[in-house]
Image (tube, rainbow, N blue to C red; front, side, top):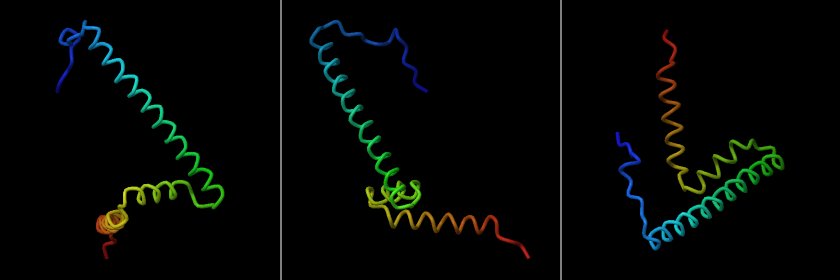
Length: 94
């Protein structure tokens, strides 16, 4: 386990280095703000689509992720494996 201790941090004193750190952190913060806005849009779009189509939001979100990641075949295989495992674990013994 790695622990960063305050005494081990090199705190820059050079104004150029400090400005570089600030600039990158400002850009990261702006990126995070854009990402949050996109997540908010995605949630609202799913909610509105669910209401308009009466398809539950959890399924629309799952399908959106499968479509975006192009993982339909992997998703299907995982579902089949999960069902097989479930059936094996909970099979009725006669």
